[in-house]
Image 1: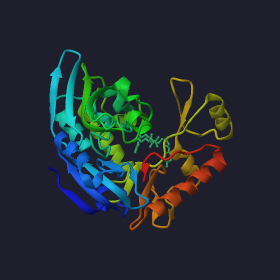
Image 2 (image 1 turned 135 degrees about the vertical axis):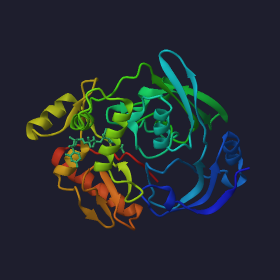
Image 3 (image 1 turned 90 degrees about the horizontal axis):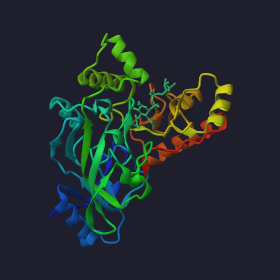
Image 4 (image 1 turned 120 degrees about the horizontal axis):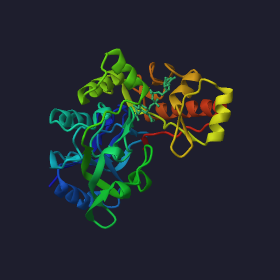
Length: 338
Ligand code: EPU
């Protein structure tokens, strides 16, 4: 039976380091714990917060509900064939450690997603993506508790409805609680080196034929150069999604701002680099209250020490207003606001 904690401080459980208390919290170490946690009399009728690494969360108030701290461990290669390895991991595994382990074991394919903060269970929720790869492209299926039926279900990629930083789990918040994720790592391994920062870093290192480890090392290096480590500076990664606009809107933007950074999408739409727009509005490195904009990547808001959720929200609204005024584009926050 998992132990119920009362008046649980969330400050150490969100990478922004924002202060907030939860009425109840419980650690979930296996699926039995999960069932037991959901049956706790104290939690009945209260909202629930499923917490992984807390790396995609902005806490703006205390949480009068039950926090489920997902701590399910375990990882294994459960099948292999000539065209793929199937590797499974518990939702509570730290994402980066899992990625590093798959490489050590000789099952490459996740190296572009090195150093993404958070847990395995959170990866499919927002379909984490970086340096030319989205987790949807390496996903086989997951196991989750469907809180509507009380049954555990297996959901494949189609059922998960992955999109850019989007999935079924964002569309139906609270319905499914992910317990295990199985990845499909295709064989033979093919490097993903199309992202400018990655190809540039490999070229600088004179790596002509990259091995998985070379890409892993390049991504780790790029992230360390550009992105703040939450262990040193509180943050939740990219604070806004890169907005997707139609071709005509992008053409009009490019006519006015010839240096604008955008990526053509298969649909014909364009994904615009929000970091570039925020930077152009002069926000990079600025501070408001105790919150700030990272010096090396304007898409990342940071806690300069002692920030509250209100500081972060005020800063994010000011940035949204600037970008809307200058570019006519609406920025949508990426983390979950609570
Ligand atoms: N840029 C600027 N100024 C800035 C920031 C960016 O001019 O302050 C320009 C860059 O020079 C570049 C472009 O904007 O030309 C894009 O920047 P970058 O390559 O750093 O990537 P991003 O689009 O800002 C996205 C993801 C990141 C991911 C990187 C690399 C989103 C919301 N963010 O950022 O994901 O690591 O690409 O693939 O899609 C996260 O989600 O938390 C995250 C860090």
